[in-house]
Image 1 (cartoon, rainbow, N blue to C red):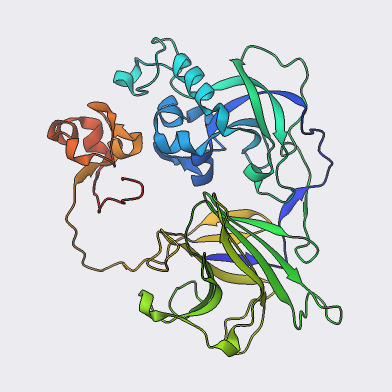
Image 2 (image 1 turned 60 degrees about the horizontal axis):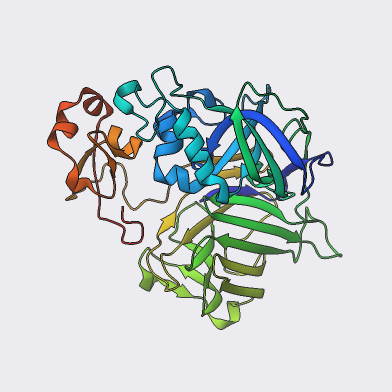
Length: 417
């Protein structure tokens, strides 16, 4: 679940961008993977905030870990003294990922901490944390006008990665850096919300001419949702942030978009509302080969349904593992106040504090989970091949002992983890 205040809107720049598609740009800054930006803290140092302390980002976390490689890379801009966070200067096109990896591995320390960065080939004088580089490239596309920091950043390609001692001959400040921020009226244009990695939402309040946004009699809300994959997707409306008792709009590729009542957590308890309540307009859902895209317009205040108000709302989201409606493959919850950004909060878990639980699974140390590969078998991915984890690595090694232990659940057949 997440709280969404429709009266505030989202934040965007109050100045025209000086950067345009086709421009050659240059920036010196920290290299960062998008996965660690999205999660807010470093994967191998979960107590450290990504955009506040990029100098503490290990080459191992940045370069070795598959999920970080797959998320793509960015170059950070300077630190905002008010927020203490670095802005995201430029996103690097996915076609350039191998170039980032090749350059980083050649630069990083492959000796420190018994080769903690397993792909790095640099000697003991090479850095292990905080990769700073000068990057030149061509702007391929501009960011989204109302996008969150990452989505608002331009994408660059044809990159050249140089030593950080190389100075840029010409520096054009990225659009997301050093800009003034002003509120965007979400009744005048679509605003954005980033729900999760690869899952975004656009929304707009439609105010009839005979009412005001404050009163909003007869207002509707237009929603567009984009999920990277082929699956059912859903947006729910709740009074308490819980699934049970909420209403939802679910889009199933090949079937359509409908309103549902969430009477329980099993599929049989998720039922379509009666035909008289199927009041959505301009609704569609399709898989375009890369994304599942759902669009609909919903009346904000309808009888016997959870109302959407111009103010704080509790919304729910989920997605499946296929276009067939079933148990969700992904869900999360976060508070979203569009005047300040978003915050992660608790998930709508079926397990509660005080519950007695039981599970059969592989025992695993947190250190090897965080590093992504087994310490004594660095080419073996931890969560994909736990059967290859030696008792020595699991129990003898002090850093593995100190990190604590977990019990793994079943393997996800889609990810292999």
